[in-house]
Length: 87
Image (cartoon, rainbow, N blue to C red; front, side):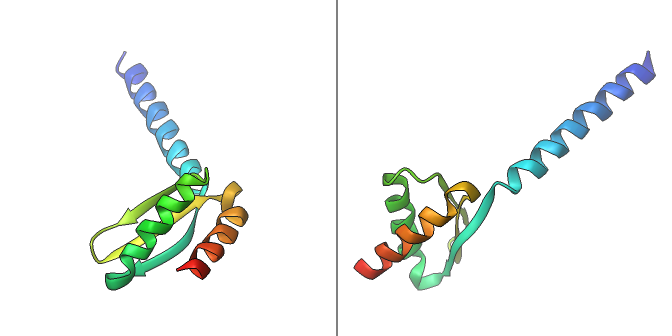
């Protein structure tokens, strides 16, 4: 019975590792800024969200990274260029 529980734990851990590995490859970095330009990344994030681009912010108060899904990368880069030309 112990081997059955051990096998179950190993299978669950393997599934978790595979899911984490697959979810990381779906995102790509669009822009990274630090200190004084963090506000720009926050506004760009809000703009991309309003345009329907799935994005997420990572980082802390010093460095902020904007990530978008790989399938939306080309469209997001175009929108980011138009956003930066406006600001």
